[in-house]
Length: 498
Image 1 (cartoon, rainbow, N blue to C red):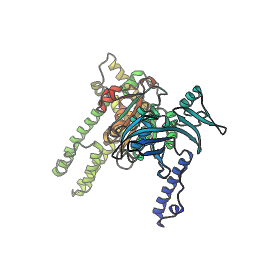
Image 2 (spheres, rainbow, N blue to C red; image 1 turned 180 degrees about the vertical axis):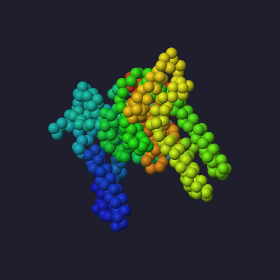
Image 3 (tube, rainbow, N blue to C red; image 1 turned 60 degrees about the vertical axis):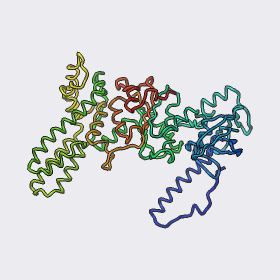
């Protein structure tokens, strides 16, 4: 069923230690893949009568094994013969740049557990092996088997649904890799499972350029994060990071902020939450940084007016984000031929400016305490003045205790992102994801969406999953499916409803 490798392939290829370690890793991963194939070598089979009179038969599984005739389900053109057609249907597909047409002579779905075939699904019915004997299931047991993905299943992660994927789901999973996918569905509709199979398909080397280590799955709920993390390896997805939004945010904030920020759940009026989760606060944040940039330009003009060459270099970088701009300019001044006293004075000034700009927590205290600034952006309301006065007093109280409202986390992260031209990745660069999966999208507000979408190198490289009926946090107002679609440059009918 699965061919063994010959001994020669297992011999050390080289003695060089670094290369030997690399070979060991390859061998280890290959052995793991082989073990997985032995446990569940395939889940389907297709036999075709081709138009030219030839017959073709192949098995389909989670991973390929050419010698055993097993095709990886992510090999779209060939796998489509299994997913897109039923037994006795005529087919037409373009495979390996060649048109192929004919008749699906046989199509079978299998369930293999620990290397043993225990279930076969055919057009005539479902058959199961029980205590060494095969028997046909009655209608009720067959329905139960489809619902549970197999009676007696012990899977703790998302169920393996590969053999049950419909033609429409397969088309969704294997759709244009350069187009975002938006899935909306009720609880239990399988939307998360379909999204993860989409991710597995994208990470197959022949389907897109996305790399697992530059891919992220973000959810709001800790339980779902554990669920997904346990599932990805069973789907052949390694090295993909899965996190709740808050844990992902905290991991970045801790690296970017000096000291240890303390976020506390505070019992605050609903209007405070609504302000901090509003779309308008995004504009207030961006404008706040623009004011800082303008004030910095004025100071730099004054400090460097004696050195027009340096001043021109500063002005030429006006479109660069404020912190990279300051750091690059500091480096240029270090390398310049300014007199030592003047150079030291300028460098001390720039060092202070960098520290000021990196004081994100103080920035948030100042922003939330500046009622006049916020009033420009927040929608008019009879109680707006009193609400902003309350917010100012609350912020001053938090600052006195060195506390932060838990709802400030997203604001700080967005501020870090704006000032750095991206989220710092800890190596001097910024986070630039190849692909991002957002689950429970209805629980993310405008600030969170802005952060996540700006963390992807291309906004088309997203898979967004959600259901407005499953909302957890009422204050965190979802931007709406229509807004999600329009922000991605898509039409409303682009939403897939399961």
